[in-house]
Every structure is written in C-alpha cells, then in structure tokens.
Image (cartoon, rainbow, N blue to C red):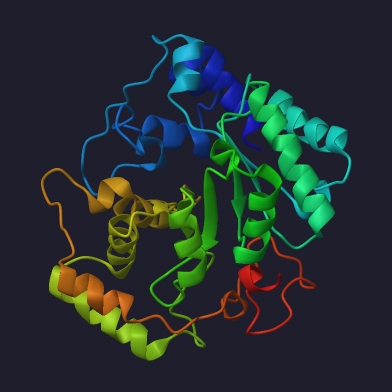
Length: 312
C-alpha cells in the first residue's frame, strides 16, 4: 500500500503527491508533510503535536536522493520468507526493494524466531550478504530471546559488526525482558521497544497500571507519554505507532511520539526515583495476554503465558 505514494514522493516530492491526492490526503503524505523536525534524530517518526505549526523541510525542491536519505525505511521478513535457501531470502528482499522503488533498505529484520535453527541462521547469513552488497544498510531481529541470539553469536564468531543492529521486543515496565536486554547491552545490540496492544485491557496488570497512571498525573502527561519517556531514558529505540485513519488517534500518536515527549517548550524528564518506581512494575506480563496478535498466527500464540522470546 505504501509503494505508490512513496514512489511519487521520491520522484516528485510533496508537491507531486499533493497533485495526485487532491481530495483525500494519503496517510504517508500526511506523515511526510508533518515531519517538521526532519533534520533531527528520530524525526521521521514524528507527526507533530498539539497545535504546534507544521512546516516541512523536505519538499519538491529537494532531489530524489536527498528525499530518500531523509527517510529511514525498514522491512521485515515473515516466518514464511525465512528459508534454508539463501537465494530465496535474497530474492524476497530484492523484490521488496523493487516494489518500493528504492535502491536500498535502511534496515531488514527477521520478524520472528519461530521457525528452526537452520532457517534462522541461513536467513540471517543471507541478510548479511545483502548488507555487504549494499542492498541493506543494517540487519536486525525481532522477538529474539537469548537462545536464538546465541545462535547468531555462534555463527558470526568474533565479527562483532555482524551482530544484529537491533532486537525489537514487545517491551514495557510490566514485561522488561531483563535477560534479553542484558544480553543485548553486553553485545552492543540496540534494544527496540514496541507495544503490540493496549496494556490496560481487562486482563492487564491493573495494580501496576494504577501506579503508572498516578505518576502520569503527577507529571501532567499522558500514560503513553510516560511509557515513551521511560523507554527513551532506558536507552531503548522506542517505536510509537506511525499513523492512523482517525484524526483523534493521529493526534494522540503525535503527542506520544518523540516530539510529544521532547517538545522544545515543555520537555519533561523522569527522575531516578520515577524510574525506580517504573522499573519496579515488572511482573513478566506475557505477550500472550495482550489480545492483539500483531501479525502472529493463532497457532503461534499457544496461551496466555506465551512469549516469543521464551519459545526457544
């Protein structure tokens, strides 16, 4: 779905997009049109916030190469795309590159360890070869526990540059994956922090959520802003949701993105005591309790105590 507007943007800039999407703005156009902090770190995740004025810095006056360099485009390989045939893996990635109309991808991640060792390692090695060939800038994994991470360590040996650039996890104060985070920190692997679903559901961590809610009130911020700020101060690469068809949801996303928690005129920082409170909320709240599957098949999620980092 993103391929057509992305190609238009790279070829013609925002003005080209606006000519095509006259009646209803495409979601990607709205996101690009709102990257007022495009020159700053993480800005492509930012949609602006509140009533802050939007003035895009990347427009039709920039060349296609400059527009491409102003974006960070990532791609994930599904379980079905993992293979013991490296040619098949490389073909899948090159197909994605062609469909998007770009020359390279900034990051390609293996979505899940829920295959087998041969497929995991062959897929990872094929991605490293694509990186070395210039098709991919960095190689990452998602939902990897210590077991499959150790497999990669055994594959690459002393070549520390071949360790994953990032391991993206379903991560919150309620499920902090201390063992996985510790492994990543010791081995120079960035930790990506993402939430699959609402943490305040019926089966959610009610007592812990109440503590977080009270702290958010004291700080004068939303609970989501508090969670994003916590993740940033932990040193994680936080990935707030990027867009929605609902205007109300888009505003909420904007307020809880990097710009929302780091506004120039109202920055807030969590104290050591605040962080201690949030760090003390870990109850190993398993991904199987979240409700939303986030791309997982029903056969993958074996019950309430299921967590992909613990399967292997």
